[in-house]
Image (cartoon, rainbow, N blue to C red; front, side, top):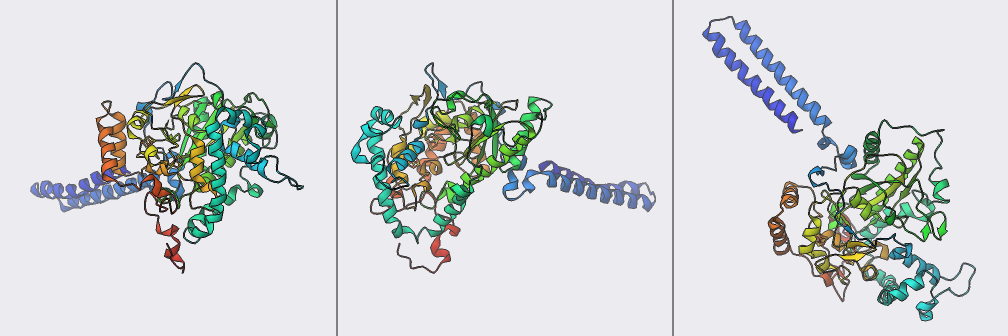
Length: 520
Ligand code: SF4
Ligand code: SF4
């Protein structure tokens, strides 16, 4: 775009100067006026050529794309990662690192509780109720909670809060009607009946190969060609950011495998590489977290990309499995995105990218296409998080660590999130279902900012300043100039006031569009 503009200006200047020069020079020499006409004609032609070239370049520029196509072919991945590339990720690995267990996933545990506490389909008593106690829980839940009794009581409290949340919804339904129905419209794409991609119904050795019809895979010219094409295609499928890495087996859950069930499994041999991709939430909705926000918009976009990519790769003749939100994963996504250089893990446990901050929802496709991999990056997040702590200060239940240094979990250094406390907030917000969640920590994070010149400047200065002076200044401005609601305000009355980080956009505000009695 800029190149085109410069060329146009050059041609136009040349076009306007030439006739003047011709007038002076040729008139002085008394040469025929036909030369003057030739000069003007040349200037006009040059002007037209300039405009045409500028128009052609502008048409090629990503700036000319609109809507989701703005991100096609990687236009959303505008931060040059090369100066920040490292040989190892900024989370540190200790000698005692281990593979995650499926029971370590909070949502997996909550699902188990839901199944245990529901009456069996044929009638009768549920398999478990809170009065039976932790000892009566089946394995591996029992061992998990016997080791962490605080987490057990916090989960029971969340389950009670969930009941109250359901009862209270009638108080809020009109106020947050558009937000709730908008969220559910996206969520409808992953109801069991119309699930994209379909949940695996077989082992990875069968399911991940089901669309392969070729006798042999199409061979790429080189791993670099493979990774370049796969990234381009993933962008055209709707991804904003895409990275490729070798899959670290520690990020694959043990104890459960989709399509097979519970048990001990090795990481499937063909899960050699991970293609990890991110999309943001709609920005204005994202800033109006907690009560007007939802995770389902980005989730459903990720699911569609995952469905397309899994199918495309299998048609090329290679196995592929999509691991997509909200809970259809055999692995954990943020560290994979860190390994693939999309960003770094923040204090609040989520990926922080240079382009989208923490407004980046993730999904992964595992495959065995030999691809050139990306390097992890260090653009200063860990050091910034040590000073910042804004997310920890605004989290209602204190789920985010305030510690200066990261803890060690599964043999890796990272700030630990108390997931049960976070889930208590999900079960307390004024929403129709806990799945709508909270996300206040993502919205308040200083990295989660739209793309404008000021944020671009801050991004580049902070990540290149080894002294830490600019990050301290940016943080000071963030805390002193911008006002945030207090943590409690995000809760529903009487504890809080259903506060939002930013004012919600008008299209999410029910009373702007509907004839309702405003009682709030
Ligand atoms: S989502 Fe809300 S409750 Fe959970 S960690 Fe973030 S701020 Fe805390
Ligand atoms: S809010 Fe601050 S401390 Fe929290 S993740 Fe973002 S930068 Fe790190």
